[in-house]
Length: 157
View 1: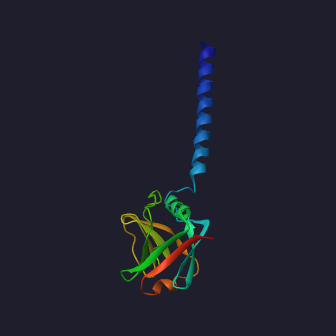
View 2: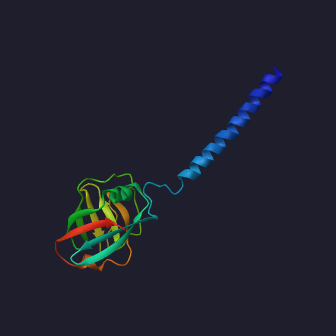
View 3: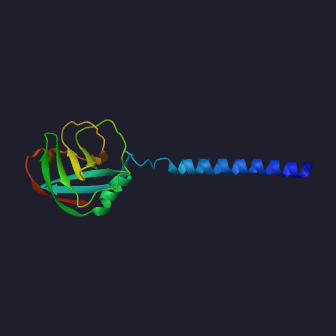
């Protein structure tokens, strides 16, 4: 009986060590894989309209990856309100990259899930439910200040 007790005790300790090691490894593997990550990825895109070109770096989240998988796209870009241009995608993106964010600023590239459109911000805005930040424009966003509707081409760099 004593040997069975010691064997069970050793197995329990060994099992605990193995489980702890596995869970720590799993936790480390998931770090940096936040579905709503606001960290830049290595994926860059180019948007061209009205003779202007803008480059953006996408964030490392599922919604941004879904957008990249759709490229290249030929769409129409138009003004919406006084702070953004929008373009409608041929299908909705996954909302797996959703989550509240802060530090909103001009130059953000977002997806508005309820309507299925990209929102390209050239002036201040506030986060609202359904808005998913996909990335940021690299070298400014001045072309977005041109008023009007234009054919838009988006491609991966």
